[in-house]
Image (cartoon, rainbow, N blue to C red; front, side, top):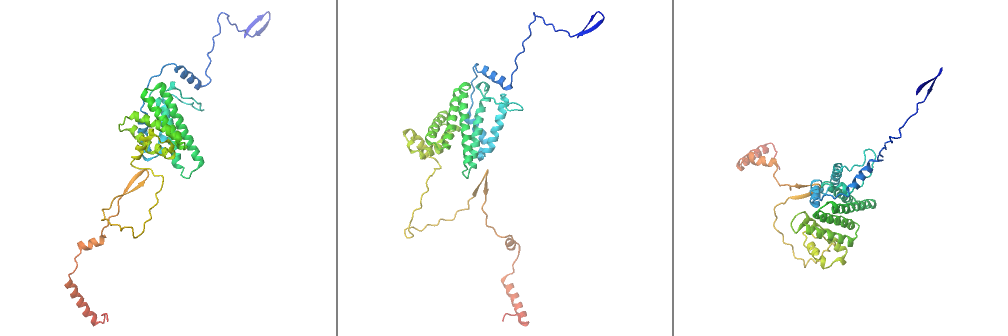
Length: 350
């Protein structure tokens, strides 16, 4: 306000605001409405830049994690908890956070996977879903339909992240990593079809994974050859049993490998042969062998139980080693004296 004097009276009038036409008003930059939008814009701008190629040994990585965190004893719950912790650490490393107080969804893009560690994020997403599905399969002993539906959903999610891993390696992975990611994706999709009893689809996907792992391994003993043997002896053999029309000259190698398995899988129970007592020869008794150790299977460890060893009582051992028994003549003399005394008092047994 400005005080102005007009003659004898004072008046207070508001002071007008003056803006110069020569100085234009400065424009205020628009602020982002959410933190996630700025990250999405940065990721979209970074997609135009060629990403570096990384090399990741996928199968060796998951084998190391599985053996160190529970799958040595088929503890899928422990392995799933490890995958959750590993995912959290990788997300913090690549700054893929979902808000502080309220959840803000942020999609995973190839622009975020600029390091070798970041490329493992979709891998552990798939491993966590797969381990959850295996845990539900083992827990569903009563055939609960709801639990089976939940199990199928977990395997579907594992197959989804396996495909995502293959797509991400096409942009930020070398040739060996792309090939291994393709084999891993085919294996996850094959397991998903195997769980739903789609034998033809499962056989095609698992056979593709088997060929890729065989090329990566080159016949050298290692994790790739172990995966090939696992596919031959379990998944592919069961698919061929349930779908005989899949047998062809191309699958002859698989059939030969499964027939040479150390532990064959039997689907039928053989009936005992009926024989008469006259025709059956008498069994020849073999000499008794030394007692062997009995192994009692107890999860998660194997406890060795020793069979009980026959031993003499402690009293008998002390009596035979530390006591001196009287001779026969001494006992006869004592018996004669006792007999004569008993005859005097009529104690004899008449």
